[in-house]
Image (tube, rainbow over all chains, first blue to last red; front, top):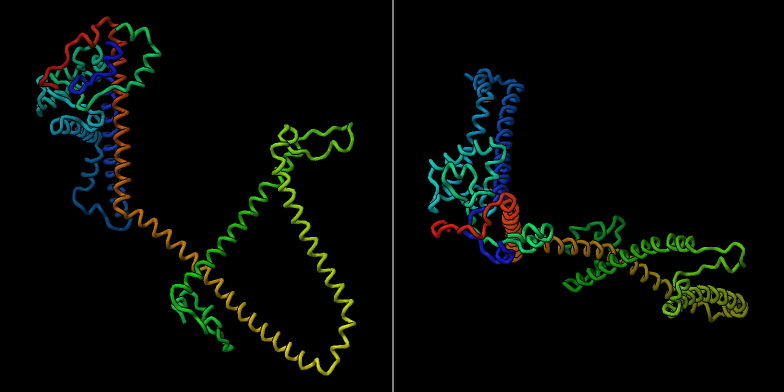
Length: 190
Length: 258
C-alpha cells in the first residue's frame, strides 16, 4: 500500500485492524474490572453491616438461614460463576443490542455479520464462547487479525462475524509519517 | 442611626458617659456617603497592600542581591584600595553607556530624597535658633495690658480648633474602620457574586460544556486516528514479513458491510 493511499483513504466500513480492536478489548476488560470491584465492595459492605448489627446486640442468628445464606454468597464456585456471568452478559448484551461493547464504541468499531447485518443473540453467545480458544492460544487467535484478509480473529471466524470501523476513519498522517520515517524500507516495499 | 449599626454597633452607639458620637449629628444618608466610604476603604486597603508589597519586594530584592553582586566581583589583592570599589555588572560588561541615563536618574532621586530629609532637619534647627533669639524681644510684649485679652481670645480659638480637630479625629477613626469593613464586604460580596454568576450563567455553562465536549471528542478522534494508523502500519510490516498479499491488493468489504 502506498503512503499516499494510507493518508487519503477513508476507512469507514472497512475491517478493523488489530490495534483498534485490541485497544477496545483492553478498555472492555478495564470496565468489567471496575464493575466487579464495585460489586465486591457492595457485598463486603453488606456483610460488614450485618456484622455491625450483631455487635450492636441484634442477633442476626435469629434470622432464619442467615449463616447458610452467607456461606452461599462466599462460596468460591458461586463467585466464579457470577464473574463469568457478568463477563458473558457484558459481551453478549451490548453486542446484541447496539452492535458494540463500550470499548468498541469508544474506538468506533462495530460487530456485524458477513452480510453486514446485526448480530443475533445465539451468534453473540457463539462469539463469546469462541473467545475461549482465542485466549487459550496465547494470543495467536488475536494475532490472526493481521494475517487474515478480512482481519478476522479466531472467534470472528468461528462465529462468522466481522468487525468494522463505523466512524469517518482516517489515519493520523503525522503519526504515520513519523512511524514510516523509523522503518522506511519496509513500508516503501508495499 | 444608620442601618450599618447592625454590623458595627460599638462604633456607632454613644458610650456610657453620654458622649454622642459626632457622626450621628450630621449623617448624609444615601448612596453618596456609602460610595465615599467605599472609596476611602478601598484606598486604605490598597495603600496597606501596596505598602506591604513594597516592603516585601524591597526586602527581597536589595540585601541578598547586593551581596551576591559583591561576592561575584573579583578583588585585586595586590592592587590599590580602589580595586575593592563596588562595580556593577553593567560597567564590567561595558554596558555602562546604555544605562547611564537610568543610573543618573536613580542617583538623582536618591540624592534628592536624602537632601530633602537633611534640609528639613536643618530648617527645624534654624527655626529653633530663631525662636531662641527672638523670644527675649517678644517677651516684654506679653506683659503689656493689651495682650492678655488677645491671648485669651487666641487661647479660646486654639481650644475651639483643637476640639474641632478632636471631633474630626473621632469621625475619621470611626469612618476609617467602617470604610475598611465596607470595602472588604464589597470585595467579598462582589467576588462571590461574580463566581456565582459565572457558575449559574447558562451561557457560561454552555460554553464550558461545549468546550469540554469538544475536547473529549478531539481526544477520542486522536486516539482513533492513531489506532487506525498503527493498524495499517503494523499490518504493513507483518504482512511483508509473512509474505502475504498487501492490503491494497485485497478487495475492500462489500457494499452491504459498508
